[in-house]
Length: 292
Image 1: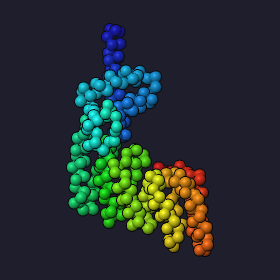
Image 2: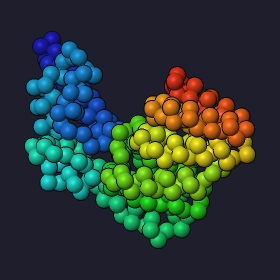
Image 3: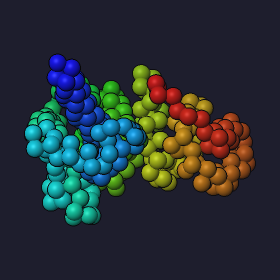
Image 4: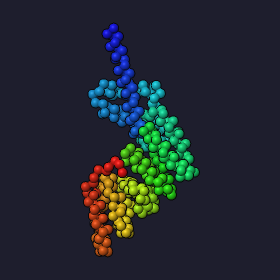
């Protein structure tokens, strides 16, 4: 009786361990998106050190079982381009939940409506993205499609698009596939918004912070233009104060110093002071609050 009880106890715990493992894998892939198998294995080993069932051998066995039972599938090298994944190693494979493939098909179909959709429909599509964000990660090609619509006339929609793009690039490390085109669209959008709309104070900041993140010199030129031409340059100071843009501001310290001297010669003391304050922030950037 005791032997049977012990055996049953072992079986139950073994099943629970397998379920926990599957859950860990799915949750990680849903959060991170497309990742090489080796990176997934390393993540599981690092987050479960010395834990039973998380040796490399055990992880390989369990991942193989998840594939065998249809929970996972694996993207091979010749399939990666379809998902906007840049990979040079032809031996690379990317495990992915099978449910994700179906969701990609659904989202690709939904995204196809964007070109002809009115603003209301576009907002519904963004709601779908938010609704399934914990279960599906957009791929670089899908981010290209979102960026294409930054020229919409709706401030609310532009703000939402930028929020999604900013989060994917800076938190998920997933970028649009065409960086040059994306930066052109960011520059064009920044030119359109001399200041952020009152209802959407983060709109312009997301643009300038992303341009700083990509080390695009346009953001320095825009800073100089704002300081010199805006009636109240202090109104855009926060657009240039963030840990993402700080290193790029610091790299242009001499250029901005020379610009300050030019401003002072023109009698634009407030503008020069704003540049000083931005440079001070860049020299000692503060961690960004998660809630904007």
